[in-house]
Amino acid sequence: MKTNHFISPKYYIIDNMKALITGISGQDGYFLSRLLFKKGYEIHGVIRRNSSMSNGTLALLPEEIRKNIIIHYGDLTDAGFFAKLLGQEKPEELYHLAAQSFVGYSFQNPASTYDVNISGTLNIVNAVKDYSPSTKMYFAATSEMFGQPENTPQNEETPLKPRSPYAVSKLAGYWTTKTYREAYDLFISNGILFNHESEVRGPEFVTRKISLNVAKIVHGSKEPLELGNLNARKDWGYAKDYVYGMWQMLQQARSDDFILGTGELHTVREFVGEAFKVAGINITWEGRDINEIGKSDDGKIFVRVNKKFFRPLESDNYLADYNKAKRDLKWEPTTKFHDLVRIMVKSDVENSVL
Ligand code: NAP
Ligand code: F7E
Image 1 (cartoon, rainbow, N blue to C red):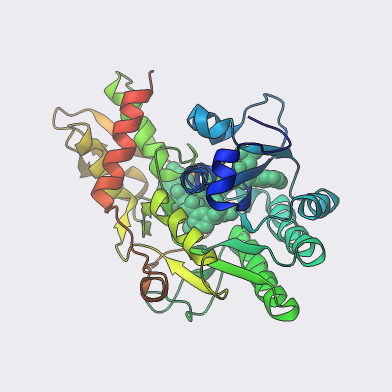
Image 2: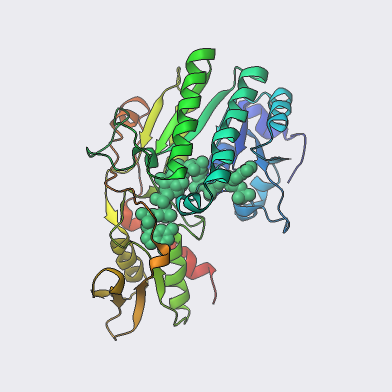
């Protein structure tokens, strides 16, 4: 990995475009880096120091891409760092993906979630306004902002009624970017993205928790998978499709807000059943609520419910109406639910050991 100046003429000449990614070490940062590399961008990424010197999903990128990413060490809560960085680099595009993104954690740690997601976003837009106003910026908003919508499916006009500190923080970020866009004539597009998952999804998110546990069971574990609300329903897509939509938003003549999703709803229980099916295990359900269990045909208990994974409030009834993205960006999800589950389980079965 490089740490300051990009000097690969090969990629510079193709496009002469510079992109800065916050949250490059997360799931979406991984897929976006791959996409922008293919398109010939000079990629800059912000990561924060941690004691184990681990770089998250950056470590999973092919060497060819990783060594061409210019890393800047900094934290979202550091306004001075971003002012200096934007002034120095003046990227054509900025993808602001960094966030405390785990909804469950936001109930336990609302203050730090607000610091990172609200003040952090304010630091970014201030740096853009003051030091690089011609940068086109993407902000990672979320379907969580809908809370418990009365109407389904949701589009860009659906009222926003957040139901978690995470969702409140993202709503504040969303309104901040919209206000700055209008007030200072900045190009900032918001992606209101529904759940998107992948083989590099963080392990605490339910889909990856399931795929990792199925893989452990395939490799001989006897520990049942413990989950919270099996009835929760989500519109789950594949992250690779969604980062393409982010990039498309910044290629438009003017900034706007777009929903990306699949328009398909599935419960956590369905995801579990499908994931075990990929591993050749048929799950049948017995019992109710907290006593519900998932059993294999030979009577082994592979799934249990544990109260500790329930949230104080659940957001539900989400379903994406992504017609605007389809019409204006020509964007459509290409990976169906079954394929997504298969990609995740197969990857974890191949790559994990007990
Ligand atoms: P993710 O895997 O959790 O990645 C979050 C990234 O933010 C990581 O690189 C993390 O760094 C970084 N970060 C967190 N706090 C930071 C701080 N204080 N300073 C600097 N960097 C910090 O999230 P994701 O799934 O890729 O999602 C990307 C964005 O889209 C997030 O803003 C998320 O809220 C939003 N979003 C996601 C979905 C989804 O379904 N994935 C849907 C809608 C919106 P570390 O590696 O150091 O932790
Ligand atoms: O939960 C239920 C849980 O943590 C999905 C983030 O990317 O998408 C993500 O947020 C559902 C919830 O993601 C467990 O209650 C049941 O209803 O995977 P999750 P999320 O909360 O939907 C949105 C769009 C974002 O913006 C966020 O950044 O699954 N659930 N049992 C469980 N969830 C977890 N994590 N663990 C369980 O054991």
